[in-house]
Length: 307
Ligand code: AMP
Image 1 (spheres, rainbow, N blue to C red):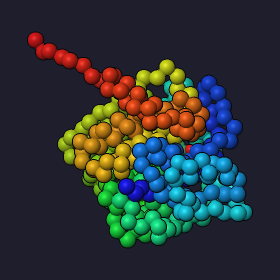
Image 2: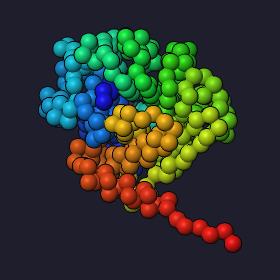
Image 3: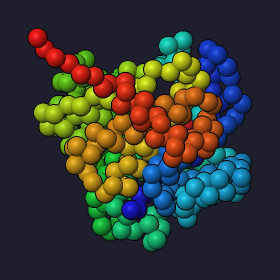
Image 4: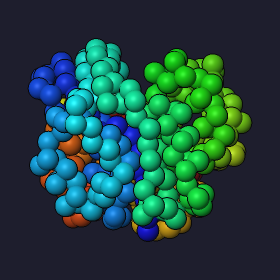
């Protein structure tokens, strides 16, 4: 049960119509690791941090079974910083600041102790760095899942297309699926994107759930209707962590099990948005997750008699 997670470990400053955070801990790999650690441990983290990344946060991650041998620490630079502002719908946001800092010269190195990992989660990061991690692995993992974002489609499309050829599952949101494929219909978009490499495609639709595509099959997982969404940041990464965490735990990469995995991802994402940053992911336990899963089952479970 070995899982490598790659991505950013960052500071975020978030503005929503309902509140504002100071600089808090974020980053794609941070959210993925916290989420996946509820399903499987150890998590073999690959990332980079600067001199401002708090020791207490590293200890918290380690306490949850996150290995940090692959996390480079740079003494004379700051960590990646991202700032975003959400619109009233809480689904869409504007990026206000992206300060690459340590990320500008990041060259990920896969430690020897991470070799032979069976699952690889490529969190949102420069596509060429995602590719470098795949190339350093002596044995191809059983499953490679990749997350990305519109920023890389706009600035590094050729690199992105190369990585797409190397992965099994791609995770994007609906806007990104449309951008990448040039198609408005998500069904047409899915066909085009799967022709670019990934055999499985997950399209996240925020509060409207997520779709899993494979060949001619499609499965829908709802999002739990929540009374309050406090901060959607990291929901996508948390979804990814729950998805791959469940697959790594069960070691079953069938389409049927991926259906369960996207429900797990949706459940984890529903916790993430309840508080700012990673706070909620640190508080919850197995019982909370089980209870939330049963809420998902109740949400879509009905008897029907067609008369
Ligand atoms: P999500 O809301 O799931 O899309 O993820 C938000 C997280 O992604 C934040 O914690 C940011 O630190 C991180 N992030 C934002 N922009 C980038 C980027 N260009 N590359 C990698 N990580 C990013």
